Every structure is written in structure tokens, then in C-alpha cells.
Length: 488
Ligand code: URA
Image 1: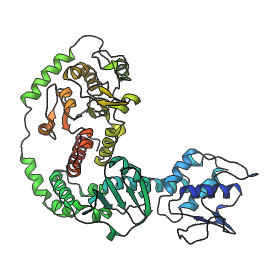
Image 2: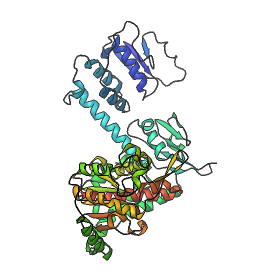
Image 3: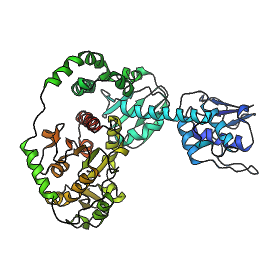
Image 4: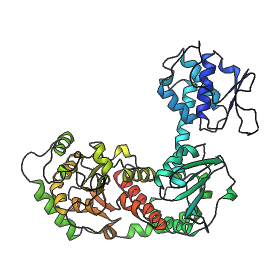
């Protein structure tokens, strides 16, 4: 019997290097026992007479047969290791062992080992998603620097794996996430991992809790109450650590009466502003030849566009991206620094926040069409940096040609305008986000419009509480757009 001592429950590197050694030496899966020994005083690696300690060299030693495994297996294994099932290490080693004689094992959905591993990977990915959505930071009173902490109990061991997400998302604040498995902390520069904690280590109430509750009560829409779906989205096991969860039972109880009152309220007719936008749109749409008839033609046109001067300083024109028949279109302002380099919209910091909010709103990004009012990056050079500059109305007007073409070709049911520039481009007149946000606006092309914040605005808000509130509003707007379009 061979005993493998891994250094932690999520020691993928250790598992991988031990599995490589065992497999090279021909040790059959049933002859291996996998253990985790975190005890600082256990014998150092290399001491075990009959054991394989991890981590060890990742390459086969001299004379041993080298072998390779499909990259898809390693990706799967990296996820499965984070599952709480005690037999995950041996399951993965068994699959690795079987790969030699069953080359297409990885692609076989009917194989019981593979089916189980895939289910486990899915559960891990879901747990990571829930952690990203449900971690709630609390301000630590009396700390020298503004510092936040959150207590969370993930369904699987995803704490270290999701930490980089929080570091990107909350890069400007100091925070710690405490979980029973591990704690991760960010000091603005580095991520640190330490032993798991006790719930008592996490701070409890603070002003933000009240904020969460006020927000949750205000966005709770009784007409859309679906308790089963709600429990699926926000499983009960997470309620304990969610400040807003305390409100759920009472809100559910009152839902029926509030929904009936909402049904009795008549819909608002379109405003003059919207009707004027409709006329303007009809006029612009009749503008001359060369109208693109496919999204490929839009892309080609954007790449050589000279309708304004912005192309001169940009790397390239950035057209929209997404399915050509998406029911939901998002319009941003203009590509940023990273979008300009990548040639795709919303891939930089604002795009990452947008992705997170979409995920929390239950809207799949791959099913939405994302574009910008202006297709070239307007900026000014400051040293080595290229600083964003808001496009002028003339530039937005010139670029509307492309946005209109995208709208005509994609024909979305719902168009979400991210910020004032997008609202100006879509509706043709200056619009204040603070006033229009959250209203459903009928658009001339039969689409429904919804104005919301631009994700970059959320990133810029200096006050954490205001940022949190605005972010939650943003997520709720996206959820609403997802529902209106049938995507969420
Ligand atoms: N901001 C935008 O408005 N669009 C992008 O594509 C990126 C950042």
C-alpha cells in the first residue's frame, strides 16, 4: 500500500506530482491511500518509507516512462480537487490510470467515473459563483486603516480559488474573507492565505448591513416572487450570513397584496421625448447607400471608419460582440484602453465588473450583444498612460450610424444604455442617468430601453457604501433587463 500525504485539502500541485510518480511506477489505484496532513510537526516530505510525499518533483525520474494527459483532464482535476467529497483524490487518480487504456475516456459522458467528476466540477463551479455573489463585507470598527471582513461558508473549498476575483473586484480596499477552510486577505497589493477561522472571528453588524436591508426591501418586486427560483438562486444555506435574508419571510408574506396593487396601476404612455427620438430615428435610418446588411459588414466598416477623427489615435475600431439575434443589447460609451488593444468591447476593468453583475443578475454574457455608442477609443496621453476622454456629441452623432446598423440587424427586444453617452446615442438627446435610470422606455424600433449606470462609474465612486448601493441597483437593473428580454 502506498500512502500519499498531501499538504492541504486543495493541494492540487501535490496531488499532481504524486499521481505522476505513482502512475509512472505502475502503482494501481486500489493500492494507494490519499491523506491530508497539515500538522506542522509531521515528518517532513521525503521521510515516508512506503509513502509518496507531496509536493515532489513533477517530472518522471530517470528511467521512468514519460506520459502526457489531456489538458482537459488537468482542468477538470483542478476543479474536482476543491470538492468536499473525501474520495476525490482517488477518483482522479483512477481516471488518470484509466486514461492510458481508454484514450477517449475524457469525452465519454456515460462513464460513471467521468460523470461523477463532471458533476463534482459543476458543483464546485456553482459554489465559486455563489461565493462571488454572496460574500458580504463588513467594516471593521476601530481599525487604523479602512478594513473590511466577511465571514462565508462555501459549499466547497473554493476560497483560495475565488480570492483573485475579490482582489480584482475590491482592489482598492483592505479586506479579509474568513471561512472554515481558509482565510484570504488582501492589503491592496498582495493576497495572503491562512488557516480557516471560526465564525466568532468575523465582525457582525455595521452600517452596511442596514444598507443591504434597505436596498433589498426596495428592489424586492412582489409581482415577480417565485419562491422556488428564489431558493435556487439564493440557497437557504447562505441566508445565515446575508444581512438581507432576515427580511425575506416578511416580504414574501406581504407579496400577494403588493402584487395586486401593482397590477391595478396603469402603464405610462410614451413621453414627447421618446416620440421625438422616434421621428429622428426614422429620418436617420433613411440616410443614403452603403447601409451594412450583416454584422460582418459592420465590423468591416468600423475597421475603416473615418466618420470622425477618433480613428487617428486609436489602435483599431471596436465593433459590438455577441449573438446576431440576441434579445438583449448593452450599449456602453466607447472602448477603453484595454478594449482598444484587444478589439473587443468590455474586456477591461469595467468589463469585469459588468461580467460579475451580469452573473449575479442571472444573465449569461455569451447570450447578450454588447457594443458601444462610439467605436474608437478617445483618450489623451499622460506620460505612458492613455487617459479616457468623454466623446463629444458630434462624435457620438457620427458613430450612431454603426449603432443603428447593429440595432437594425440584431433587433434586440431590450436595449440597456450604460450611462449618459449610451443614452444620448440610443435616444438621440441628452439624458440624465439620475433621472432616467430604471425606467422602461419604449424605443422606436419596438425595443424597450432601460438606462442604468455605466460600470466605470461604479468603479470610480469613492465612498464604499455608495458604491455598494449603486452596484446593487445596477445588478437589479440587469436582472430586470434579463427578465424583460427572456434571458433571465
Ligand atoms: N467602457 C465602455 O463604455 N465600453 C467598453 O467597451 C469598455 C469600457
